[in-house]
Length: 353
Ligand code: SF4
Ligand code: SF4
Ligand code: SF4
Image (cartoon, rainbow, N blue to C red; front, side, top):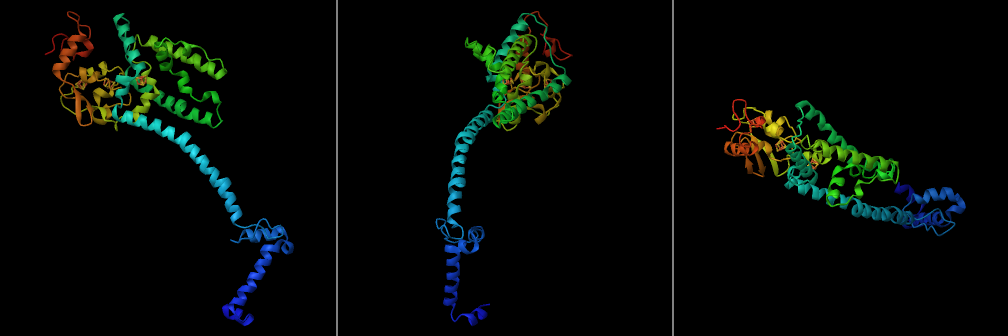
């Protein structure tokens, strides 16, 4: 190749100069000869300082689109990314991080020991019992059938609809649909003597329907709690949320595989969530997604060390025969053999040895 060039031009330098003249012509006056369109196509493909401010040239310098891209695409994207990072990702990470840290330590004990709506339901149930209201316990199959509802509420009302509302697919007023129907919002604000959350929201049809539904649901939960333990907890999306992390949490329920367990079923009868697995499973399966870590199964299990609440490697509370007898006496006032359900078939309340 170089040999043939050599025969045409005496030196490489002269050959280079020739090329420079052609490209100078092309990049400065190129459009006059080739037409702007053609020159533009050629010069934009070249990494050349073919100045865009020269009206007769063959297009523009690569640095122009580069600056333009930096300015309008990258620069603006960085601002957008910053916006997304600080206004969307960071707050989400902080709330999720706090949530994870919280549940990593407390785990399901949040439900059994902290949640205000859980406490209110429990106290109303105590009132119901004092008033002699007949109590209803869910049968095994019904307890299992109810479980998917909390997952549907979590996925639909906490994740999906808010995302659709944010994307403009669903109405903006559906931005926080779970809060709109949450009985805890109404119950806890009522506890502060604030009745505002009880009022129907009349901004639009959706708000009105959801606030009306929230009032009905809250009323139903409060009345149902008189005759049933923890009625709302069974469908609560928070229960589903912390079910995801229950095995990773430091605080957890452990039922060991043991021959001492006679599958008597007292633990399920004592369980406010009517969980059948606690009496016929052991290991990971016994710590069910519906568990609120209230510890009643451990309190009423008549066998030593079968059920425990653990924090890390330490057992905070373990079932024991002695504790069971004490607890049974508290549940069985003198001369009243009523809580027969907490006694094994071959035993008599008040006479458990
Ligand atoms: S299940 Fe829901 S309502 Fe019940 S105690 Fe847990 S968070 Fe509270
Ligand atoms: S109460 Fe104790 S012994 Fe009875 S089924 Fe439950 S874990 Fe087993
Ligand atoms: S399984 Fe035990 S700790 Fe869990 S909710 Fe039932 S009684 Fe409470």
